[in-house]
Length: 137
Image 1 (tube, rainbow, N blue to C red):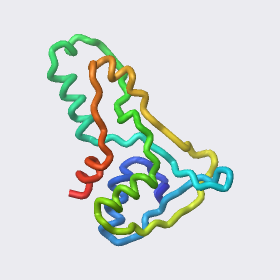
Image 2 (tube, rainbow, N blue to C red):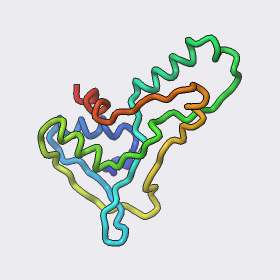
Image 3 (cartoon, one colour):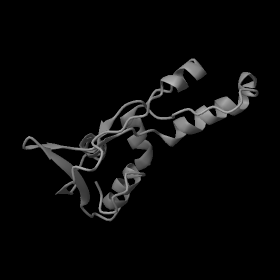
Image 4 (tube, rainbow, N blue to C red):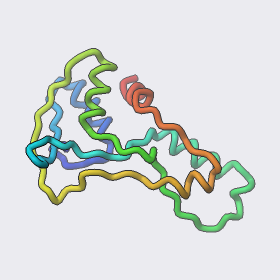
């Protein structure tokens, strides 16, 4: 996706490239002569914080033992959608340099949050535009 081939902090990397007015390197797969962009499960750090605080503060979770819970949005978002939404928010076309990616790379990742939803008896709502807005401000 990016030169550093680091899928973590993608939104932060986009913001930094925008500040420096540098092109964003976006990688894609070529599948049946069509460009397919990698999709990842993006989650706002505030949502992670709220989930952790709920577990720490709520007395009903104090004696639960060890649990492993996936935290994410449960939604896989393609990187080109992230860029498109950034463009709408800043009202400006973003410079993008596209590169083809190896077929060994994962096309899509998404957190399975079913266990988290059951455990908390609720789910956090992920809003892509709201999350991107927080990165810009």
